[in-house]
Length: 315
Image (tube, rainbow, N blue to C red; front, side, top):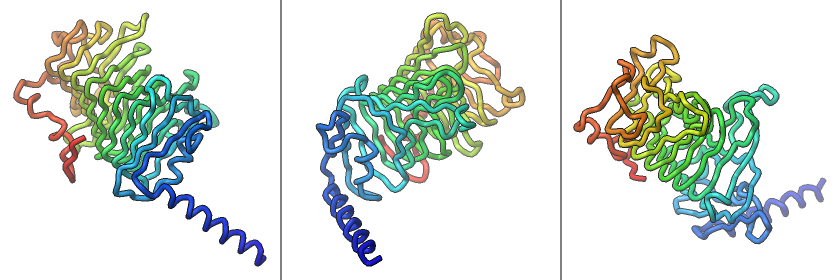
């Protein structure tokens, strides 16, 4: 018994010392081939101190990392940066119909921490098309994604908590049905949105009291060969908010633009467009319950205005 206790104390002391080696703003290196400090991203996250006040980078070398990754809520101010967007891949393959898993446990990456930045990385759910399969699941506030790819089919990106703020810049997002969905406030700037099936791009569930939901600005919507009937969105909940402005809309966008999901949601859904272009941008046959913003209204919708909640945030 005494020997066992001594072993535990010794083991705990060694683990604490190891963690302290990384209790600083230095960059941590991850390489799947073993030429970094860690072989998995999860191992690198484990040595990061809780509630860090400094910015810490986890640099991930090229490689395929099969990890079901959680960035917990006590981790803050972390940047995960890939060496090459297309060749640094985090992947997993859960889908909703594996052992009755359901949608919300299928994620490849779940981010619960705040002030997290992800750059130059592909996050993929490569499950077969047998059910919902989330690649990115967000719960934290002030999350930034730059030059990332999000690959999947149904439900690729789940923005999971109302009031949280997300910024996507120069990203590629693909999917089949409702592949950007949830209640968060998210700004998509200069992103490529690729539709892989006749279905719906967004399924916002914005709460009534939240003034903004999804804003797509200067984005490009394209579709796979054989796709011909794509809706910009449908409201997962009554007050879903989605705006496409200054975007290039492909010809595969349906003339009516939006779907009500349930008929009564025509009375409450907040679906807007402004100054879009392309063959799918014509507004002559849009549903009567969507709105075309005026120039003045559109000029007031900026990242600063959209992200102004309990605190200022300028991603």
